[in-house]
Picture: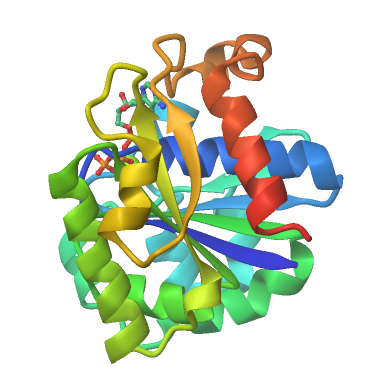
Length: 234
Ligand SMILES: Nc1ncnc2c1ncn2[C@@H]1O[C@H](COP(=O)(O)OP(=O)(O)OP(=O)(O)O)[C@@H](O)[C@H]1O
Ligand SMILES: [Mg+2]
């Protein structure tokens, strides 16, 4: 059983893409039930991507955890999605430890829980990082993004004492022509880079619902699978 959080304090770097690919990959790999949970109320993508009714959300699951399964949408064999809070104000004001209590109630039902998060750091996000067994910290391939995520890494490890071994840095959208090369990362940061994902013009988040055969052939999907194998399943 693993709780995997996909985080970044930079927008548009591929958190949701990574989380969706990881969730689908794990649901195929393990055979156990996998839950994709959205912790993004900015608003998130799960509603439109999976066509989830606005009433079925994390907000309801936190309020009525006993009815948890009724707020889920089955999106594939063994794969379920829970949409994030519709109202960011409510998400911000959710009581301390609400996500922790919910996860401890449901974790035994799922082989894996993959949590897609938002750019803004708040209490819910911190609680999620504290509980997660594995945190994928995503940046895109530029200095500005890298320096931002390193700040987040330092805050998580120094201020909140999250063990460094639980955090994997992933660089997404790497193009062959990029000025920034793989070896530059080790010169710039002490944080080991767990994996690179190439920029993939064939990848599109809507492939999850429209064409899974096409999705599994994308470089993005295959590379996320490799990162999951290397970084978290020993
Ligand atoms: N490796 C990739 N190659 C090509 N396009 C990608 C790749 N990864 C993500 N994208 C695209 O980049 C855009 C942003 O990705 P995504 O929504 O996953 O980022 P995010 O970090 O979740 O953004 P937000 O901060 O808005 O939640 C999407 O259009 C997605 O399809
Ligand atoms: Mg997102």
